[in-house]
Figure 1 (cartoon, rainbow, N blue to C red):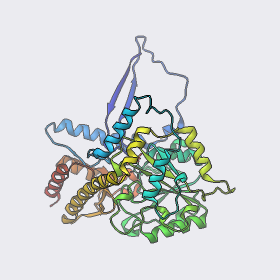
Figure 2: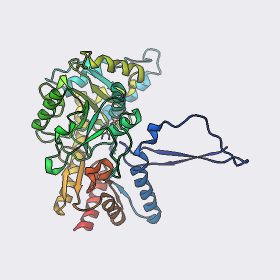
Figure 3: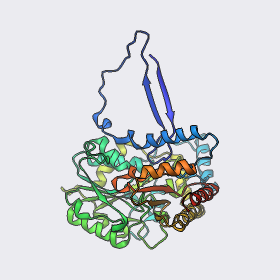
Figure 4: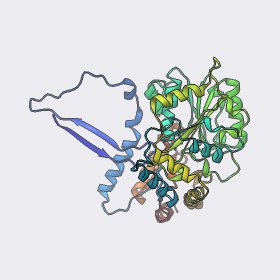
Length: 439
Ligand SMILES: Cc1ncc(COP(=O)(O)O)c(C=O)c1O
């Protein structure tokens, strides 16, 4: 029996993974061999095979049709600029020390090194009363989102913003919390989709989540780029308190906030009783490939029976994770040192300038573009259009890859998402091509 492995590399790291598809080949007797193991029906439910392979297929088709075109990807939510030397050197030095008898270390604390937990609590949660022991270092926010799903189990009701980063829903489907796809727009049963649109200042009608246990909330939001205001987050926390819900707050893009907006849910009084925060070094320090993140679980957060959630999360971390790479943690610590933090923030500024260029481009063309001020994403509205048609037109006429908004939920059907991660020359070239197309 032969198996052919084909790889196609997708564009947006956050949810476009290298695809591996394996095709079983018949043997010489015309029979193919399968194991007796049934495919997990929850995996079969995933809508995964719909949007992004389609983008990949269209990209491939485009490259075949236009072999000389210089395709620019503004679809990738991946960082592009090199790590600051102070950060890369710390990892190189740490890795080298592992080759010495004196420097060698094996397993570390499952929750992360004491120094890094302390540095995270002091850098991002100053004056918010978050203890270093409430910070759990991870290999990235996406991994912790899945671990949180495992923690809460499949009997929970969940609510998500619409549009939203797809990982919350996909991991809900995998653990069996979300049901079948219920309609053409690809929404799942047992998930409350809370519309966040320009008309409601990108903040949902929370009454829709009245029967919800776990509310996923991402600010600044991927894809809309909206950073919730103090008033909006106060409303969210008060709602969770009244409703008895837990908020899983994703602050992966908090360092991109320019305006006066909360950078953490714990800036809101009472949040420690109702919220977990997941975050990441990926977009702060260009660690998308290095892999490092963290989750804060406050001691005050309790289950209905009064048991502390932190104790169970600790158990999940010890059982399902075993701790972040020591080398990545050395890099994380260096990026929070005073020189390191200055250096990584200047990279953040670079991407923010890219976002300004793109925002100015769309606005000068009379298009409604949201985000880009407090986030490295722009959410561009094409009223009355279908996001796939817009994606196709832009690709066809400018050789620029974007992401059709419908991939982030039904509320995205008239939008495209454009990322500000990219080399400056590509951003400027993309701006020129977009001006030619739309002016
Ligand atoms: C909102 C949001 N959360 C989490 C992640 C994943 O972060 P990490 O790279 O730490 O897994 C992403 C990545 O694009 C994201 O957009």
